[in-house]
Length: 588
Image (cartoon, rainbow, N blue to C red):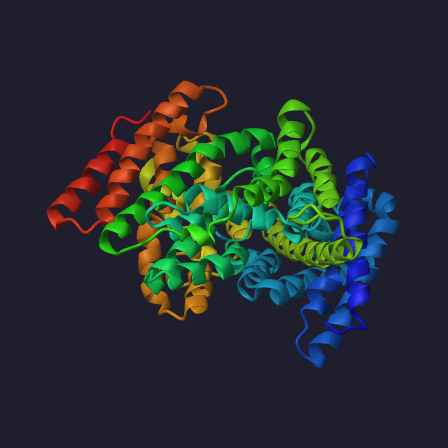
């Protein structure tokens, strides 16, 4: 980013922030206005900002201008387009619709690489030519005007409900996270973690777990979490003599858990709101016990590793002073308290509560850990907010727009129902085989596709089958969401492991093996949610939910300790077996 272009990107980021905040307070805005503008604001970030060569920059400018014309045309003609009922009129409209779809594919490709846009492109080819496929996986054929029109001028594709979630909810929470990250909240997370866990055996690793859980709850990205908290925790662990593979594995596993830790849980939780029809608060409450169990398993694993290696705590001189802990913790506790009060006490929508919390966080950007007021520093922080929020909103928007093409085609062609039937027949109509097939599909898709997109696509085809086999909708969605995270630590493609291994210069396969043992909860807890349905029913039946949580906690502790501890193979095998029985026998 050159010095000349920097003011442009700051201004564009500020416009994006202002637009999404304005939507929350302005009342109803037609979907064919707000959603195309959302895409228009994302275009320069996805196509020009990420350009690495002059050729990419020139092509990005051409595509951005074309996309802006297309989005603007839809905004200014939204009333007339409503009368077309998703049917394109003339070659001009067909060309515009085709251009918009191709531009969305290129946006996603430049932001996250080939896999997701390749899936979306295959879906479009199937919609166009699937009528020529023999057998049950063909379809009856779709007129081009109707197929492209439904995806581009109606609310069944690019401007569907998934994009609506990105516009009205995800963007606000991304901006909220950018505000917290720009100030002292990150240091507050580290200080609280250091004070809470630093003195314990394996304390440096436990500081990484606590800080990553806190930071990850607002970042929603395992890779971003590793890069940010890992810059502090990884050197601290290696300096104290922790094995490099263990240090990197702890950071990768802890950072991956951020996406399942309320209150934010990344973009996936907000998409779940739309797909399940359940309020965000319900999903957040349902997710809290499983998230705690995940981090419990990591904590136990660190204790087990402490029996293998000498894992000292953080030296007293390196631990934060209590005054610093109290002051810096306020930089995230105040906004979080306002957010939770707004949702639970004030009865506001999540996005409105996030706006109130965001404003409090923005006010705190004027102060530092010493409570000194500095306008120049605040200016730099607000600049960071504009740049980071604009870029992150565009990145998530590009992913969701591309995933919306896949979901639109599944609905238009009936392919989703056919894959669901295939899953039901492949599992012999039995729940657990269907769960294992779904988990495998999530792992394969999640290898190169972001968690949110992997979750959306998998739950669209597997969710109905799991529900038909007896799961509650929220159970099915949480199960798929958790397993969409598997690829963060599971070879052959494990993004969080790659980054952490690179930061400590260790062989990534060694790190991955250790991470899978430490993160065993990521594989077991989703299955435990099925075997113990009460585990996610904290809101309606807290007594049984807590009982189920304790039961699973005992089993996870035994399994984690059995996998990692230096005891004899017989004792370890017995612990794993007892843990499995505790979790899966006589579900609650």
